[in-house]
Structures are given as structure tokens and as C-alpha cells.
Length: 150
Image (tube, rainbow, N blue to C red; front, side):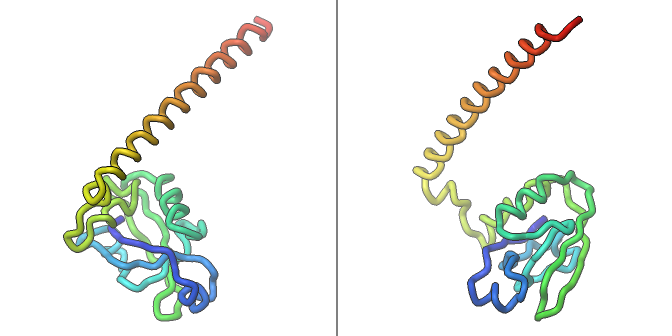
């Protein structure tokens, strides 16, 4: 979508009068966010009427969509509630991945090789765990098929 976000400070949370939201700290040029009218300083409080309670909640909401989907964005700007609409681009179903690269900053993985190594190990471990779980589910399904009357 082309925005960098961060969680709200306690003061910003109180000022928004909503208790939820994420702060827009950057907007990429020619992005769906910019075309929709989102600007730096906006507080996104909902996407497609789902509360933007945290950065991870926002990521989850966006992952439910496909390129070309039009989503509503409820935000607060200068104390006023505003609803905008954005059409997601082909890479937008992962939303804010570009937020690591704003202002010529290096991506987080380049800043810390150890972070990349640890992340890779965690991902591989999770893949193995999920593969094992999938195997068990397949076996359970086969067992159920064998038990059902034919």
C-alpha cells in the first residue's frame, strides 16, 4: 500500500479519542496510499471496517485482500474522522513491507546478519512444525475415510 506505520504513543492514543490506531510516519510516492490521499501524520483506525488495533492487526487485514481490491481506510486527520479508499497494487497484499526502506534506510535484515540468521532458523522450525501437523491431519483424514460407511 506504500505507507510506513508505527504504533501510537500513549499521548497520541488519548488525543485520537479512539484508543486504537497506527500512526502513518511515511507515504511512498505514487503508491496506493498516496493516490488514496493518506498523508504523513494520519492515524489509521480501521481498514475495511476492521479495527486497526496494532501494526500486526493491520498486516492481517491487508493479507485478506488481493491485488486490485478496493479497501476503505478510516483515519483521523487533525481531529477529524475521514474515510478514504485505496486500490491495492500487485505487491500490496503484504502491505507495509516497504516501510523498512524509507529514506534510503537499509532493510532490517541487512542491518543485522544475526537477525537474518535467527529469523531463517525460526522460519525453518515453523515450516517443520507445520509440515508435521499437516501430516497428522492427512492421517486423521485418511482414518476418518476408512471409518465412514461406503
